[in-house]
Length: 102
Image (cartoon, rainbow, N blue to C red; front, side, top):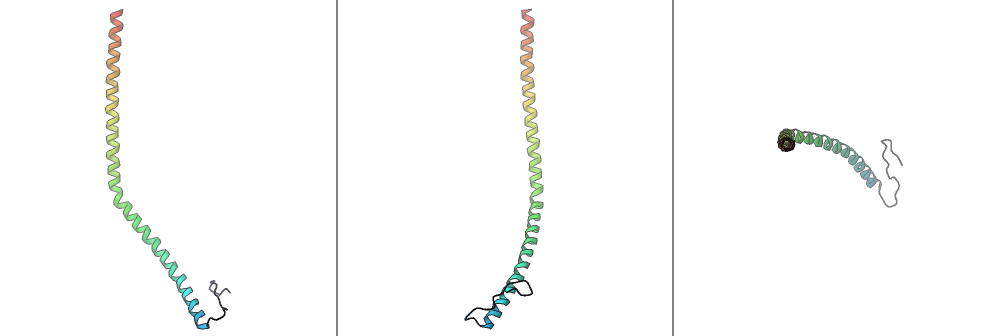
């Protein structure tokens, strides 16, 4: 049977007293009321804790990322300069060989 608050309650069971049924209905209503507040509290607390951790770790992560990007760019620049020197020296060797044969 549905009560006006929208919850279903058992009202007719053999061997159970009316007092027990009223107690069960009261506990059922209290459980649903408490559960709703617990969820909201947990949701808000989780959001605040997550935001706090993100703010706490973000500056460290940003500086580490910046250092990695700088190190990577420096490494790429060094490799490009080394490759340019290799190509330049091999180009000079080819030019010398062509001039000698001509």
